Image 1 (cartoon, helix red, strand yellow):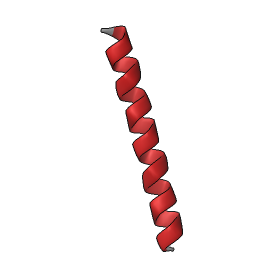
Image 2: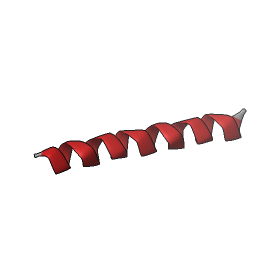
Image 3: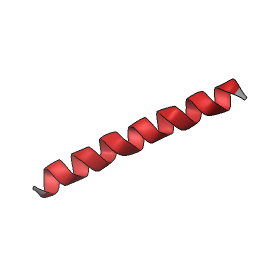
Length: 27
């Protein structure tokens, strides 16, 4: 259960980083 939460948080962090990179590249 704890592992699943950690993976979920990591996934969110990666998505946010990707999103920021995308917006930075487009701008």
